[in-house]
Structure formats: structure tokens, C-alpha cells
Length: 513
Image (cartoon, rainbow, N blue to C red):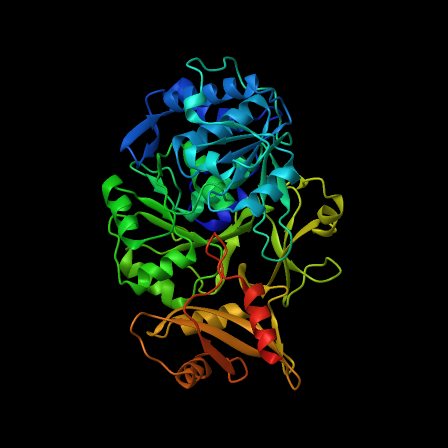
């Protein structure tokens, strides 16, 4: 754990990565606790209401490991994990890591093409799943392992002699800007997430802390921003499957289990805000995936009684920047400051740090950075610019804070101005009639592009496009207001709740013709 310091600068100055030559995530997140404190609760299963101890989780994972060995799985083999939040999901990953296999998280809402693409690319021939997953994979030529297939006795012995760079988990990108690529991570990836997770929850690991997220554990945000760091830090994690985020279910989970620490994706926060719902009793709220605006941050202080800490990262290199209300005030529109252990900067095309707008990048040497894209050396090489991993996001550094401008291919060029869509979206979201919004550039013969907004109104709300245009003009700049607004019933979203601007751009381009 981080040692709390009186200031951000002191915390950063005193931090060094501690990566021993021998490192295994099963030992970090389960086996060590099972030896030291076997009765300690690791996971609270919302479905049954039961607490799963570290000793029980270790036994379950060793049962999975024994079953995988029987199926011929060995070190370096890929194993699909098609499960929602559940003790078995955690156990399946731990089993793979202990035996040296590579786990491949798969999302239960994937359809056949998405599953087939990931399983074929990874070469996984065994998938750990449940009855629902078995039915989904009925047409696949795979070896299926379900909980009722587990032997009574588990595999014995310590974890293999893995090191920080031994491959452990293959996580596929969302694929919103092209074919999904597999980011291969080593056993150091859990250690790499701990500093950011801790500060985004105002030093997670305080007495009484209990962690939950509605984000699925098939994504890096659920698996490594919540589940595995919680287990490694000895903080109980609630396992509660939500097919779709719903407000009533969220409130029930938080109240029933006395959740103290939660990671809410921005979309969930907007839904909670739109419903004017309050969640008392929380000690920390973290959010990541999209920048939050002034309105959301101000509302969060009232609704939750705490400052929402934004964090930033991506599948390839996660938890690289964060806010931390315990150390410094949040700056709206910014992604936070570099997490201890990470050097985050804005660079130009030549790979040099620049004082203006540029590409947000992370210097090599941090523990949560991927080893490579799976079997794709060209894509791996393209991801780097000299000593920097380029995120694909545009930004500006302001007094040590990283201000998000937009995705590199999302920045709107209009009449010579470069306009980031996030700021306009944040502004529109402050209007009382707006539930959610997506902003893109629409091709225009005169201005190159114009700002186009797709707006979802709150239930029963009535608002005209002109009113929203004036709203933005009065709050941002005359050149950045949306010259066109289309009202829609819903926006195209990824399964992690991000607006798919690629689809909105296609819609806008089609309107031109």
C-alpha cells in the first residue's frame, strides 16, 4: 500500500516501484491472504448474500486449476473466462495465473461474432463459464468448464515461478476505432494499478472499506480498477451482476452491503444525477472513462457527500492519472495528476514534451503498461513514439493537471478552430432538460467541419435546439456552439458506457449526402 503523505508532491517523491524478480498475481490477490488470514472476507456474493473468505476463494481457484490441468492447459496457454461478477469469475483468473496460463476476460453481453473473433485471435481452447455461457458457446469447438464440473479436490502447491513480465492476462480493447486488439499484460499489471486505485479512493484500505462497481469484471475497469486491487489490499469486494445499470438495483446493493467505496462510470453518474438520487454512507467515489464537468462534480458533493475522484487510463496502460480529494482539489475538465510511479506528458509529433496541445502519452517503465499487442508487432510499434506510449487522446498540461481535449480523431476543426467535444458535452449536460449527449464534427464545405450534437432529453422534458445553442454560446465560446442539434432517443454506446463517436460521425456524414 501507499504510505499516506501530507501532500501530492511528497507522495510522488517518495514512491518507487517494488517489483520483485518473482511475482504472481494469484499470490498477491489471494494465496498470501489465505495463509495469513484465511477467515478474512474476500468477496461478498450479492446473489446469495454470503461472504467468501480468502481460504474459500483459494480452494475454489485450486479446483478450477485442477480441472484446467485435466483439460491439458499448461503455462502460456490462453483460457477464456466468460463470466459476470461472481466468485467463480475471480477464481478462474486466479487459477490461470497460479499455473502460468493466460486468462482472457470475455463479456457476457458479447454476441457470437465478438466472441468468435477474440477466441480465435487468442487461440483459447478452454473457456470457464456458466450455463448461460455454455448455451452461448454451443456452436463453438471448445472445451467448456462449468462450476458443476469442478473436482472436489483442488490443485496443490505454490504458484509457478513467474516474474513481472511473465504473460498473465490478455484483455481486448473495445474496438470502437477499429478491430479489437489484445493487450497482453504481465504479472506486474496488478502492482501497476494499486497506486492509482488507492489514491482515487482517498487511500483505499481504511477500516470498514468495502468496494463495488457496476462495471463488469470482463473489462479492465472492473477487473483491475476494482476486483483484483481490492483483493490484494484486503478490502472486501461485492460481486453483483447487473445486465444493465438500474438505479433501484444500485441503491439496493449499496445499502444492503454498506458499500463504502464505489467506482461509477460517467454514464452511471449521469443517470443517478438525472434521477436526483442520493447514496449516503459512501467514503469515496471514483470515476473514469470520460471527463466529468463542473456540474457533475458539484452535484456529487451533495449526492454522495464526497468529491468524485476522476482517474484516467486505457486497456494498454491503465490508472496513469487521478484526482485525490484527500490530497488536492479537483480541477473540472481535467483528468487529474500523474499517479505516483507514472510520468504522463503531452508530446508533439516528434515525441518531444510540448507546452501546448498535443498527444497524451505515458513514459515506458511503469508497471501497468502492456507487454505488447497479442501477435501484432506492427500495432505494438505504432503505439509508441520513442520512449512514450501514445494514448490516442489529445490534451494540455495545466499546472500539473492533464486537461482532456478529445480523442485524436475526435477533435473538431471548424473555421480554423480546434474544438474538443468533451467540453461542449459537459456544458450541454448542465442544462436541466438534457439527459445525455454526444458531440462530433460534421463535414462542411465552408468551415471544414461544424459542431453537431446528438441530444437525449430527460423524460418529459421539452427544449428547442435554439435554446441549447444559446446555452452553449453563453457558457463556452461563440465558435464552439453546436450549429446543428438532433434529438434522439438513445446514443450508440460501448458496453462500458462510452459514447461511440465513430457511429455518430458516420451518422453526421450521411446527413450531408
